[in-house]
Length: 302
Image 1 (cartoon, helix red, strand yellow):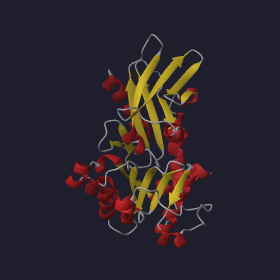
Image 2: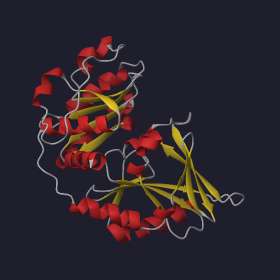
Image 3: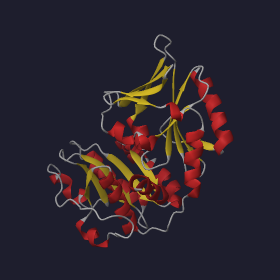
């Protein structure tokens, strides 16, 4: 049954937005052919006793949604319309909780006479009636078509990534030598952290040169590493990330290579090298193009 429900949904999805492709390393994450929209498809049986459905959202899949116009799609047996929830509206809610021991965020959907509710473990219940149907898909698809992306420099992308992190409540680290080139014409100024967290002595010379880092306020936990590969090889960013990952310790952030859309194929070839498969980097690193950086910043700071 799950394969049949998913098959019917995908056929209907393709009829609306055109061809899609499955992203590597996942069975549930799809992207439009032009990379403008991602859909994370989850299926559950409907438990008739309480009319609810149980889902697990994998941490590594959610990481690949960040920064992209994306929808969480919840399917169940006998469903009239799909439940399509914009990921951006619940991204911070999920980030405020923690995944279970198996690396998944546990959620439930309750189908009740007075409305459909989404329950996120350790966060609470949310009414999601308005997301039943295809309207969310159409609205998100239309918004990506209307958006004009300016030509961005390396420093402007750094600036936007810093602003996104600041809007999400993180402390921001940008290499000391790069701070004078940040471009405040693209966003409101933000303060950069003056010192790195403790415990990084063995890899400090590597970490301090990462283009943008997000650091959790208060805990000093490293939450995000971003390398902007404007003209330099994508491979160099992956090597830096690999060195950080293999250093061990408490570093378990998200790694993101940021570049223009034309270099996506290069990224895919490089990240699938045996070196990065064996280290585990392939499973926790993502590619983010400039257009999605711009759109991410616009959505968070509008």
